[in-house]
Amino acid sequence: MRDGLSNKRIRPLIAPAAAVTDNTAFVSSIIDCQGYDSVTLVVVTGTNADADATVTALLEESDASNMSGSNAVADDDMVTMTPGTAPEAAASFTFADDGETRAIGYVGSKRYIRLTMTPASNTGNQFLAGVAVLEGKSPANATLAASAN
Image (cartoon, rainbow, N blue to C red):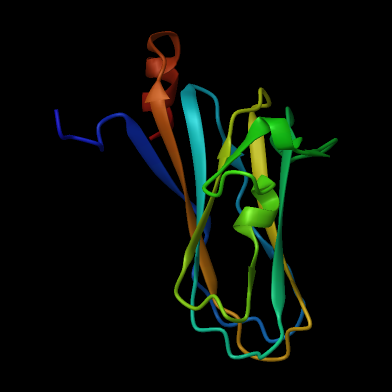
């Protein structure tokens, strides 16, 4: 079967907005992982106008819907697109990474997650957007997940 959509839910993670011209963090929406077997967070960079900016990723997890009591996700609970590189480091980028994608797979056990992308040394226009791809509804949770769509 070629259909890759039926077992997925795609949620806004970081909505496209006006450029960040300082070191204000991009804080994602809170993603509810319940009812899905896997979660991938995908970030897309725009054209980065600053000549020395860096952006660092931080993934947090919690059992509370408002992320109270959240903790940084352990490297063992994340998957990276770049083997041998720590997941959050692989999802981070610099001023030279125009129009690129970065992704982190979450394999932890908490119900809620949130991604923060924090610029440093940014004085130009920094654009960023992203989506969360939730996949593989488990049969026991299929009704719950479907009701969340």
